[in-house]
Amino acid sequence: MSRAATTGPVLRASPDLVPSRTELACLLSPLFWDRPLQENDFDEYPEWVLRRVLMYGDWRQVDASRRFFGEDTVRAAVAHRETDERTRNYWNLILGSNSNDSQSPQP
Image (cartoon, rainbow, N blue to C red; front, top):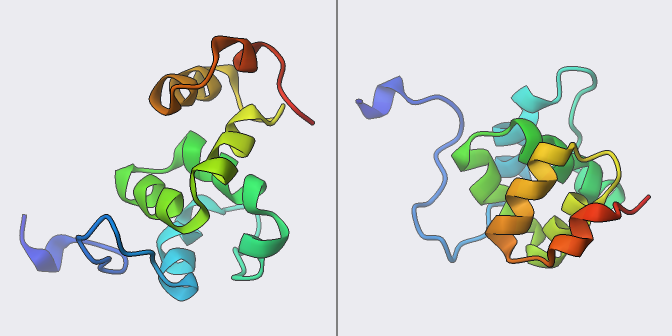
C-alpha cells in the first residue's frame, strides 16, 4: 500500500510518542458520527471518547488513544457500564484485569 493511499493524519511510528490533541481529534473524528468531536472532550469526557474508540476504532485509533489517555483511563472506560460486554471482556484480557471487574461495570 502506498503512502498516498493511507487516510487520516500520519502519526509517528514510535510507540513512545503521544499524539497531539489536534492529531488525535483528526484521527478519531470518523468515530463520532452523532456529534462533532471537540478537543476539550478529551478533558471533559475521556471515558466517553475511549469507549467509542475501544468499541469501534481501528488499530491506529486505539493505539493513539491508549498513548494519549494512559492505561488507567483505558481501564476506567472498559469498566464503565455503557461499554458492551464483548468489548469489556476483550480489553480485560488485553489489560490483564481481574475477571471479576467485568462482572460489575461502573456507572
